[in-house]
Image (cartoon, rainbow, N blue to C red):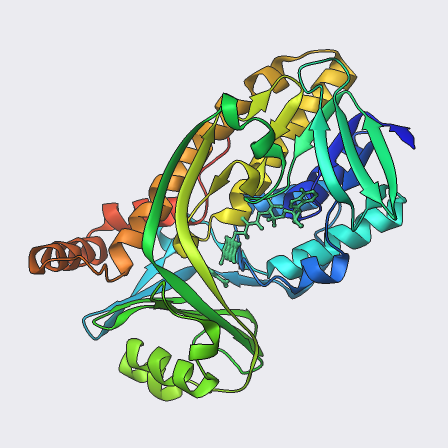
Length: 392
Ligand code: FAS
Ligand code: PHB
């Protein structure tokens, strides 16, 4: 069965759904093809902190109402090391803040918005493949309920994440940059109140821990774990005991524990694909780059990619100008690399590396001491954490 649209989007995660919504707002027809079903996508527990760029993108997409009603505004974070806790006050340093609102809720809002405008999303599509991406009519083929379908479009957006088909389609035309970290993050979700108002990033002798949240009644907590660890190795009790050993004393004592409603291990890597455009195929979000979650950048980078891409495609169709799509890869990569640097730096600063020498640990401690003692250094962390401005 053949279909025609202006933009074919592969992937219905935050990137694909946000792009679909922004294009629809600009009057540009689009179809999303997704391999999984909505419940599976909503069940993936991921990001929790939104930069203002991401909030603005959701406002432009007309999907920010619940975010503003339920999201938690955070004016800073705590850095804990050496038995003490140090606040990085974003508001005081740079007059900005972040919003804590789970990726699951962002995705839910985007799904609801897309359904309300009646835009086409094909879920549980099999054997998705991309064709003729250098031609004026690139195509996305897939099998649904045993029938083969083909979508002809002016542009294809590869929003299908790190393991998707889009980057694989151009594997022989890309340069990749990668660093894999020698540890993972074991994360749990639990319906207990957070121990503090803001997030705590802890560098302890036993390893990294992060105290985050989804609301005032639901926490998202992480500990650095070995790459050999399996989720089944970690009972809830074992997690909470280790987690509390890594927090500052007062926070550990005040921590309320409870049964996990989700528990998973995520590997950590830095990864960038260059370029991000191949003829009329554009990569966006995790399809093009991955950051270690220490800097809370993954979802936010996906949002800025999509803002650049949506603007470029709208410029093409509405103003008949290709300046935006021609400049997409360079603009997006400029912001991506700065976020990659910050995420690598936060990861290097806060984790215990297996091969670290005493000298390495002393340098890490000196970096932390300098950071919390310098207004310039704290300002640098603050402006990167809340999100650097987008290029015009
Ligand atoms: P996604 O991977 O979210 O979505 C891609 C979509 O494409 C998926 O729905 C997938 O099913 C679909 N797809 C894949 N292959 C396909 C194919 N062949 N055909 C059709 N569809 C296909 N970021 C943070 O900021 N903070 C965090 O704490 C954090 N934790 C994370 C934990 C994990 C385990 C992972 C994997 C990522 C985490 N991230 C975090 C990053 C994450 O939030 C991503 O940045 C975000 O999901 C990016 O969204 P998308 O680009 O839409 O990719
Ligand atoms: C989360 O709440 O999932 C979260 C918050 C901040 C991070 C990483 C993850 O840096």
